Image 1 (cartoon, helix red, strand yellow):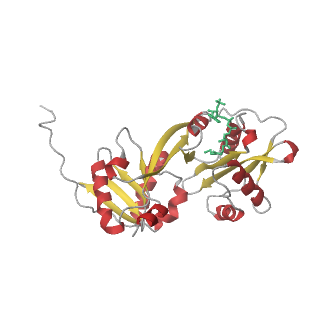
Image 2 (cartoon, protein in one colour; image 1 turned 60 degrees about the horizontal axis):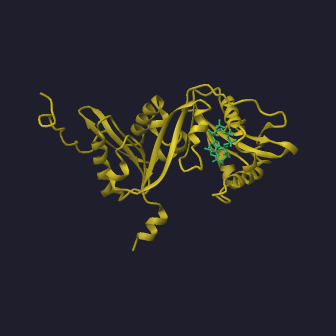
Image 3 (tube, protein in one colour; image 1 turned 60 degrees about the vertical axis):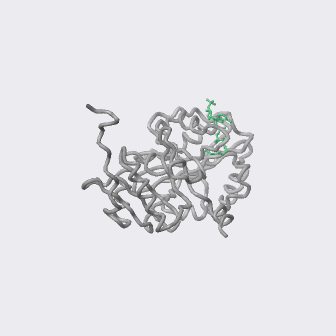
Length: 296
Ligand SMILES: CC(C)(COP(=O)(O)OP(=O)(O)OC[C@H]1O[C@@H](n2cnc3c(N)ncnc32)[C@H](O)[C@@H]1OP(=O)(O)O)[C@@H](O)C(=O)NCCC(=O)NCCS
């Protein structure tokens, strides 16, 4: 008879052991990522690759197989994973971090069902985001005849691009600078043609898309898309996404990540462009500012 009274209790999770070091962590993440990038990391692999190289790795085995693992730096957990049904083991590993890094300032966890990691780990929720994988056809429509796309010139156009981004995100005044864009161009995921303006009447840039391509994963991703406020809700956002997808046709797959705090359900926009698999992530932890305030 199988019932709650007679079911064998799972043995306590074994002490942390198994592979340590960035090479093993890199291999595990790679394998998981290629199967389902949107549920493995909250952001494209290439964006945290360098950080992972400096992480320490903690794993727990179930017999010979790894059943939970995490990668952590001085005060952040960059990656965590548990085999199905082994969340308790992951929680145990997270518990073991206490002696090593204290309470992590940053811990991304995949949201699953009604069980909330925030409650389980007693860590505050910092942010929520989505990550989606393009698997369908994009029905993005025809660009009106008085609009066109034009590539962003890496040197000449950076201040115009930064200005447009600052005008598009009213809640983030002056967050973008030419220097920040220049650093993005120097990254290994920038590719020529991945950044382009939407040009409107009078040759004026009214929208911008920044997409990236990671050679190691053969992955394309949409990094930023934005339109000036007066250009919105006429289908142009969908067209920017369609053009990104066209320019990323060579990639094995295309992903996108974004905040769930956007003023509308951005997921609907991406769904209508063929992004069919979506995962939601919670970022737990205390911000540096909060930690500074609470420290004696
Ligand atoms: C995101 C953005 C580019 C969308 O551009 P847009 O031209 O307004 O979007 P579209 O007109 O192509 O709309 C496509 C779909 O998105 C959704 N959508 C767009 N704006 C919306 C709004 N204000 N409210 C609700 N849904 C909206 C709808 O599902 C819409 O489909 P429908 O018209 O068939 O209902 C634009 O709103 C923007 O620049 N926002 C600020 C920057 C930003 O947040 N970018 C991040 C995206 S990750």
